[in-house]
Image (cartoon, rainbow, N blue to C red; front, side, top):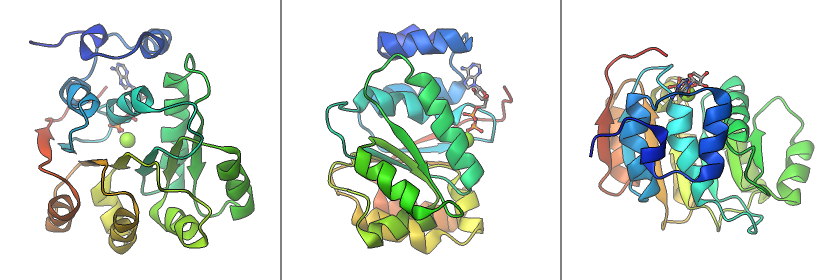
Length: 213
Ligand code: ADP
Ligand code: MG
């Protein structure tokens, strides 16, 4: 079936209402391609440039899978910079405005860790962060990993360029094996291909040619 509208993607009404408020008229190519498979729990490798709507492509399916009554992180999103972590968290909060009891937290270096520890303790289901700070929380045991079911590597090639390859791998080794792993990258250097091979289960590959919103 060819997809033209957000209603056809299988998203909940609360999310569709938020999309409407944002004025999004139709899903972008990466959203059309990724959302149905993400909702099915498949591993994905999405190759797409900046500005193609990747945050919604993973953010909306993540929201749909969260159990609001479970107060532990269920989705973990890695981004290369604090600005991107904040931006992704803000966008996900916009998509979840009609969903109750879902908390999204951004964690990154340069912000006092005590504040993040307190927020994590209070209960969050979606964590967006830079690899270094996520790993810091893992080592301090201030982030609970046992309920994580979805891991997203956003802008994976940029994280590689910033020297986060080892941190990304360390995090992937710590999260539960029974999970969905989704990787987005503008380019596919061999280190990222390897990462996909070693930490994903038969990922479906999606490639979107340049399209600016
Ligand atoms: P990327 O992560 O691929 O760089 P973003 O997810 O940040 O792209 O999206 C870029 C911009 O496009 C954001 O301002 C976002 O709100 C907007 N956007 C995303 N999806 C749609 C859509 N389907 N229709 C209109 N605008 C959209
Ligand atoms: Mg993005």
